[in-house]
Image (cartoon, rainbow, N blue to C red; front, side, top):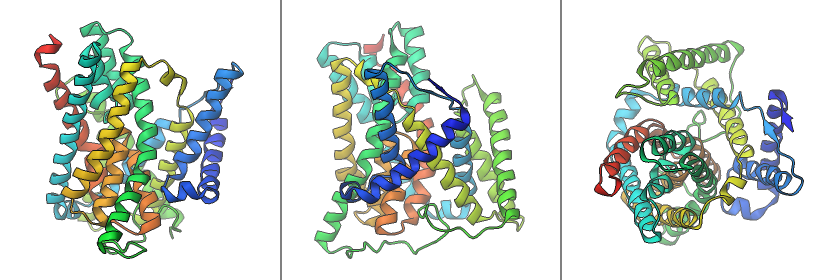
Length: 403
């Protein structure tokens, strides 16, 4: 059953409405701070899975809007990135990036160790490590093709996609419970009140208030759409120019980079971007993208995972939780900002940047603002992690066990 682009948009919108209803109606979802797009998206994916498995009906959505929505979201992240603020948060950003790289290394060490213990090709350990988890579907598929073509690993791409699917789901589920656990620890130590007054001052225009009414005008909205369109167009050209070179980066990174230059160039010229419109478009793009990404997951691919690979993924889930609670939280200060950073780390450590932002929005909507987290996580998760992950993967592939 083929669902055309408009029908896909309708279903994605319904997924968001169902997610809102579920979070409002199910106390457990509120308790564990599950993002609304994640709640609705997983229900839709389960329905599609049921139709595939029991009614033998394959639902194929037209996802042509999914990539533009993702790129628009990253463009708004870039438009919201003020260089002065990034300089202010520089030491924290460097510390968080070091933690992120540490997890990349541990994911691959764990994956390779378990694959060797099971007697399977250690390349499956990399696929079940940072390649597909921190890397996501795009990076996983790209490296899967490399593993098949240059290392002779059969079904590598299929395994990578299945691993990334598992990571996206778990990344969206784990962030809230980890934050809930850490908030209890903060409360037990007397570091925060029951409403969790954060370290940062409130800002009604930031991304951490996706449900806030954004006062804007048609002019400001159109101006912001123009900046986003320029970021997408120039970022796409830039991505094509550097493709195949040592500087090759995913398109969304190029889009984000162009948006950062645009925003800060306009600010320097005394024409800052309209923050209200940026936040409005960014949050709408994020919600619709996540809904589409989750409702189109092929959950039956997970059933095709062999026991060793599934065991690796289960161990990676435990590693992420332990790392977020005992390393990320403590190293980042053991305060409220560290709670939100830990929830975000779960999102992109296993899934993707949009999942991280959704996790943090769910936490801050319940407990309060954390400007530091929304300053640091988007830049690390959307820009630096892809570069760091590529270097880490290549260093691991240089090990003797892969030759």
